Length: 371
Image (cartoon, rainbow, N blue to C red; front, side, top):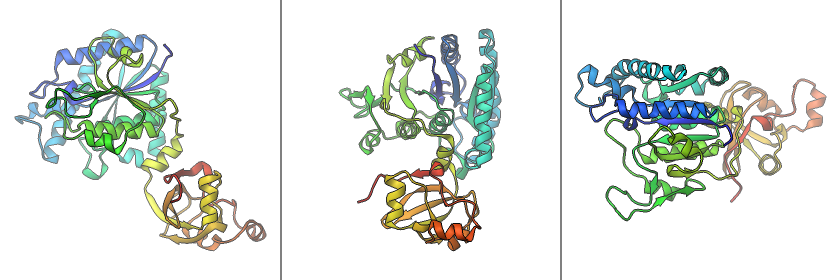
């Protein structure tokens, strides 16, 4: 088997017992599987839930807290317990873990996004096992990923993983709830996630987690869009990750062979960047950037909305709506002076350093074509 870079996401239900405590048997099963995959030469990044679930009982809560302060307090206690357990049990296998806590802010800020990528790359190059979790202790609603399913998808795209493995307490996606319908049919493989598939996945997971099957499918959809194949399902035994990588996992595989890797700068523009304004373009410019892969030139721009600076990301609209997003090479004030002008006029003025307002390498299309 070829050596692969994989992201493994382990949910709370796969780590803890019904009381919210770390389940020793479940935990050691994951440890042994991680060690076996590493021994086989694969690179691993672990996205591990369980901090809140592991911490709430230590604070005297009878069940997972529902208030923000309760969740954050439980995470503060549970995160240290979780990483201590990983360090202790991975040590006999010669594996050193590194804890990384992230929030949405680490993705939305371009420099922090680059730094996160650089740190992960350096850890992998030195044989360290990154263990990632959302920084629940300081996260507020508008800065959360929603759940670790989405976090694992974004991380898998960032580090250009070959596979995202989401381990959960159900063996894949069914056309109906298998717990209520014994005749429910499992999907062993899906080329892509459709709205119909999302309709099959309703409800939430266990009482110690935050996500359900729908959140996992949305995460899979995101990972696929970034060029990463996904597995969602069960696993048991030290060879479970190896079996999944060989295509023999107990669950659903998602993603075609035609998936293509997305460069990090385009990932950031598409999924993480704050939008600072809008640019409106004519049909000629729309055709050029959608059909010919061209950069956006001043001649095709007829309107600008908002105040923004060079390096900000803006939305680009055609006659029929949103076309995509891009990082601008000029401020809104400069673009207003430039718009409608063609190359000879720009060269005559000799003021502007580039003919492009948005270079094609800093452009992300969000629209497949015209009506």
